[in-house]
Each structure stands twice: as structure tokens, then as C-alpha cells.
Length: 403
Image 1 (cartoon, one colour):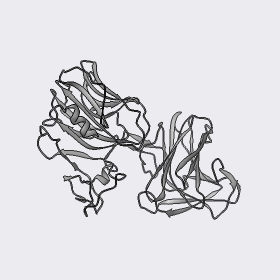
Image 2 (cartoon, one colour):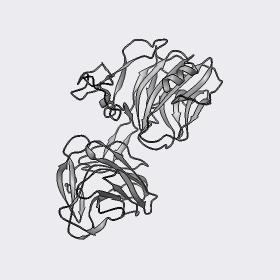
Image 3 (tube, helix red, strand yellow):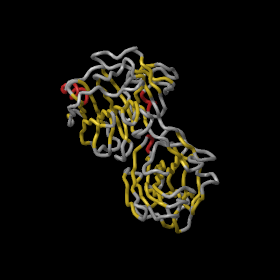
Image 4 (tube, one colour):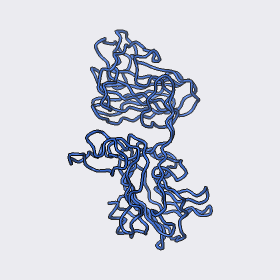
């Protein structure tokens, strides 16, 4: 499988060495992954991942992200990429379907065209959900207007503005404690999100603006913005886009398991991975883990403040830690080890605070990358370059591999 698709495709891993080498990491290949035509092994299982395309050119780091590990999520919006459908109410606007190229390369972004009235120009759906945290996400692209907005005007007054030329968030205001993000995508598009708290029957509304804070104005029937690929989740931050048609769609959690036999040992070992989070720190997440039961497991965790390598034995935690308030979109390299030298964790070449405990780790039959070993606590992050050793790496080796 090709690295270009691992962030887009749910994958499994397969050990191709039959063992984990004492001095070098075991290698894995993808199973059930399809690749873009110009990458190695297109449409073929059991193909090693490469950092170059089939012509030998380096795959950009923005593409070479790895496996996207996300928890289960539901997109409550229907007709998520069909703004011209009757499921969307048009407010002083009309829709011109399939007017621009989206981030996925398809000509599927619709144009929200202003009506001549002096008002807000938008499309919206009202969702009969439960009260709590919500996040709206919309792929937007500038047309004649270079600003867009997202608002929730049914339950609260949360509103956020987005500069679609500069790729920046403008004013964020209103009730519901709103916050917003904007992320550059391919083909000049941006993923714009607004998170807020609201009661039941919240709505998802968005459209063009003439500037920061200026959503209500005399419309021009020749002007607007492009939008599509809409998400509306009952969660505090957005996951990756979930396409819908006639009903809401739930995506299963990503669960990727590898046998520990011959790859990891209880007495001593080392685990390395790189991760690129897609959101700011929130709650406890897991980048790697092997789970026996609630009182006995081994995992690399993040508690929104610290990166933790945890050996949990008979209900007692033996933690090596390092401070890490990670930043969305930034790639980090982490290595965790255990053995006769205790437990250690190293992040981007910097050694954390170790733990002296040398008790053998609790190792189950499988380990999971991008989960806690119990198929939970997915990090909503891209995971790549996963490696493990049947020995404890030294401090200098950990520094070198994570530098």
C-alpha cells in the first residue's frame, strides 16, 4: 500500500519478516489498501510502503501522513455534498451545483450565489440532536467573495468568519463559547470549522461575507463562494469528512492490531512512532498500546498535557513522562522503552522523566497503533513509521531515532 492513501483508508498491518530483529525494527506492509495509480503497488495487497512515487520522486510530507486513527463519529447532516438538494434551506441565496474543484480533485463544490436582498446569504439545516458540544465543518473556497462564515442561530448565536484568500480565522463571537479553525487543503480549498455548545435542534448555517464580521449586506446575483463536504458532529472538534446522502452516517472507530508474538517481549522492548494530530489536546488518547485488562496494560498515552509511557501492573501505574501540549498539524517523534534500565520516553530528541521500575511489562496477544490496545482512545492523529524492538534502546539511540 502507498503512504499517500494510508491517511484516507482504514488499514491492517501484516508482519513480513516473521520476527522482530534484535537490533533493527520489524517491517510491516498494508493489507486491504488501494493506492493511487502512480504509486507503488497500485491496487495490490502486501506491498511495502515507500517514501517515493513510482518514478522515484519524493512524496510530499503533506501527503505522506500515514494511518489516520480516529474514533467512531457520526455526521448528522444529510446530503453533505449536495447543497442544491431540498434538504438544504436556502436563505436569500441560490445554488449552482458542481462549480469548483474540491480538495479531493472532484468538481463537486457547489457555489452559494447571493440573492439581491439585503440580508444574510446562506444555506442551512436544523438537526434534532441532543444538547452539548457541536462542531460544524465546511470545505470552502473563494469565488467573487473572499470571506465566508459559519453560524448557529437557532439555539445560540455562535458565529465565526474565515478569510478564504489568506487562510485565516476572523472574528469569532456569540453565545455557546464558539471557537474556530481553518486548515489549508488541496486545490485552493480550506476546511473551516466552528465548535460550540448548544441545546437540541441546533442548526448548521454558512455562506459568503463581504469581510470580517460582515455577513448581512446587499447581495449581488453574480457573486458568492464555493462550499461543500459539510460535517455536523455532536462533538467538541471535527473528525475527517464523512459523506452522507439520505441519512446521517456513522463511521466506525479505527482499530488496527498487530500480533505481539516475535515483535514485543514483556521483559524488555522499545516502540517508536511518528504522529501528526488533527486537533488540539483534548482528554486522554493513546498512540500505541497492548491491553490485558483494566489493571494490566502497556501504552503510550497523552493526557492533554503530557506524553506518557505507562506500564500498568495490578492496578499500579509506572509512568515515564514528558510535557507535550501538541499542536494540530505538527509531526512528533516518540520512542518508549522498558527493561533493566527502567522505563523511559523520548520526544523529538529530548529525554523525558523516567521511572525506575524494572518489572516486566504487561503484554497481550496483540498491540494496537493508534489505540490503547482495547480498541479505544483513538488519537485523531496520523500515525506513521511505526517500529518496535525486542530490546531496550539506550538513551543515545532514543535521541538519535527521534531527532
